[in-house]
Image 1 (cartoon, rainbow, N blue to C red):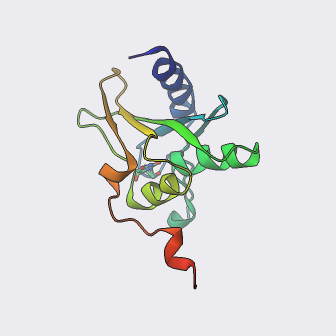
Image 2: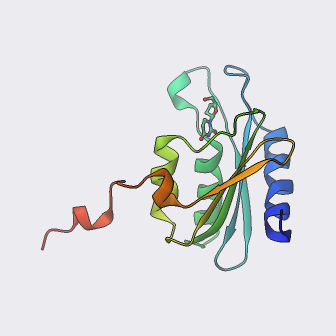
Length: 135
Ligand code: THU
């Protein structure tokens, strides 16, 4: 794991440890390095009204946007599972919004086993902005 990925791992682990997941019992942490060199993080926050819950990636992206950065250089997601998780479909779409083809998506477990992807690998035909342009 390189220095950047290791820093993201530490931040995502901190967020993972603060996750609020009493209903699924499945904590997730996410950390972002923006192309401006800033770090952000988030965890999943569930709710007794289940659909009101939010994903770790979603909350990390919100923190990035609230701080004024708009581009993800790398996002790391951590959960406690032997089989590495990948971002859910909705979060792939959220990541796509602020990604380039060079954006690295690193999926990890608590032991630090990792697998890296590009957004095109995870969401090859995601909804794209050009489809909203009318002329
Ligand atoms: N979860 C995330 O935070 N990110 C994902 O990409 C997948 C799922 C959360 C949502 C819910 O709180 C719990 O994991 C179980 O689905």
